[in-house]
Amino acid sequence: MGQWQTKDQLTDLLCSLVEYPSITGSNAEIAIMEYLYYILEDCNYYKKHPEHLNLYPLEDGRQLLTALVKKDSKKDTIVLIAHADVVGVEDYGSYENLAFYPKELTQELHKNIDDLPRGASKDLLTGDWLFGRGTMDMKAGLTIHLSLLEKAMEGQFDGNLLLVAVPDEEVNSEGMLAALPALSEIKDKHELTYKAAFNGEPMFSKYPGDPAYYLYTGSIGKTLPGFLCYGKETHAGEPFSGLNANLMVSYLAQEMELNEAFIEQVNDERTPPPSSLMQRDLKFEYSVQTPQAAVAMYNVLYMKQTIDELNEKLLNAAQRARAKIINHYHHQASFYLKGTQTSTYSPDIRIFTYEQLYKEAVKRYGEKEVARRQNRLIYQRDQGDRDFSTTLVQSLASLCKDISPMIVLFYSPPFYPAVSSHHDPMIQEIAKVAMDYAKQQYNVDLEEVEYFPGLSDLSFIGPVSAKSPIDDLLKQMPLQGNGFELPTKVMETLAMPIINIGPVGRDPHQWTERLELTYSFEHLPKILTKTIDYFFEM
Image 1 (cartoon, rainbow, N blue to C red):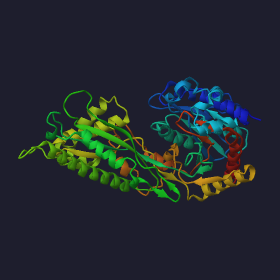
Image 2 (image 1 turned 120 degrees about the horizontal axis):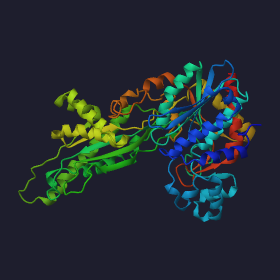
Image 3 (image 1 turned 45 degrees about the vertical axis):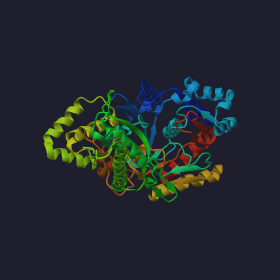
Image 4 (image 1 turned 90 degrees about the vertical axis):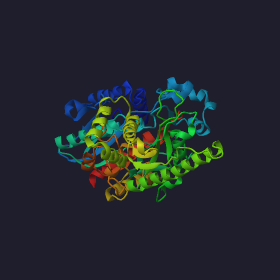
């Protein structure tokens, strides 16, 4: 019996991982990778094969970990994907100091059970749920992958396992993007054949109180479209001599927020409608000048839609907003202007994609001058991806301000391609093995869902499900090639079948985040072991 096989052992391992407060971007996000390296380095297998255990640096000093267990001269390899970062804990309120101590937090919640929502208190009373940040998303999945790795070290499987533990999944997936060249290097060095990638993200409920159990054969896609609204500045005492960018962005919000036109349905699965993730003007000091520019960015999820189809919906929303903005301006002006008075300003609004605006700027100033201005901004950059994307678009808009007001559609990272192995015969067969075993052994009805709804790093390693090439989006992304690079060629080279079979939890990214222990740490490891055994026998 190993050290990571029983329910109690796995619970203790999970708690040791959760105690690292590995919030994305924190020092603990580095420390947890070093801890993983430390506990694996102490295993007999890695004492004999230290070259199979490695830390790879990201450009910003963070690290990802790879741990290969190779079975003799076998080539067939399953890649296990897990992330070790978590979101922040400000939402825990008075329990914030216990957020990374699951056993203590769970015990404290028993004393204050009235603080919990009804569903969480019901789970707590069963005695089979563990609360805390990262217990569900996704240190439980990482814990189970370590358990599988230990079985591989003991010779359980007739093939190879390669664990890839990454940082930054919760923000930009820079860890997974950095893992792609590492995977390519390991593949060549050890002459491996990557047959499939298994992720251990937890099951997501389809609705509050959903009792179903799921596995996933794909992962949903995410885009982050932005609209730069570039108006006409004026003195607040002469409001009809210009067009306030805040007015423009407010009408875009009405057209975009929860817009049913963006809901995509594939069989019984549906994407949520768009939600605004950022909206503000770009005026950084107070004055009585109206804001010239404002920006809004929206979370838009997709499955099989093409980028062209998404762009058409986004541009249609901008066109509807345009008509309402102009109507609003003239309608309000009619109340202010009297008699024969007229306004010397009559707004018209042009709508561009980023690519169109870039070409317009090049036509006016030449490609060298536009490149010089953008390179200068890149050299001076002190902003994150979203803000710097906006800065690049605003710079082009200012070059073409004589044709303002304008609304410019662009995209910012992160971008998660929609991926699916739903129609892959091998994935269908091993999914059936997992579902049959869960039913026979534990009377659990595992249901296959094509798209994991919570976003995952499988997006960068699985088969793309949309018909349009990823480049259709990247050419509307100002940051691509300007400090950000989605490595599409490496992604295409490494693309492999994918499946996500993970633990049961509830309330990800909430202070009531929790993990169910019996299925997750007793049943699931055996389901996965059976599935992997079958996989290598196929």
